[in-house]
Length: 142
Image (cartoon, rainbow, N blue to C red; front, side, top):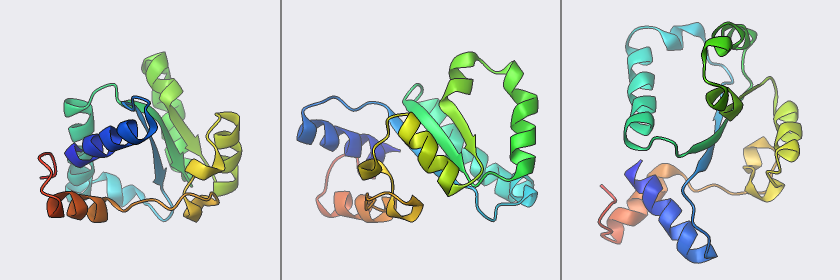
């Protein structure tokens, strides 16, 4: 997450516009309920806890793409107990086609959608970006 904060700072400097929020795309293709149990669940929880603990209110939207029916059913059950602002940030989408339509409705241009999802953006892999920051000996890279 530290490296992502540096990435947003770099984007801000390059564009002249402050970047403090981000949108997350999560592809749930081939995910199963076993991912939500045991060691796998604990690992996923740790990953998501970092963002909510150290970087609260930086999430603009999260799009869960290729969400299995069971995830959508669980979301329908828990959604009424969540704060409306939180609910507005989460989008469970069944397919890539559905995701592209939602992005268009939300004003997310194809130039910001990764190629693997049908857009034109070539994303930078986190590992590659962190490696670059370490090579440049930038202070927030590790």
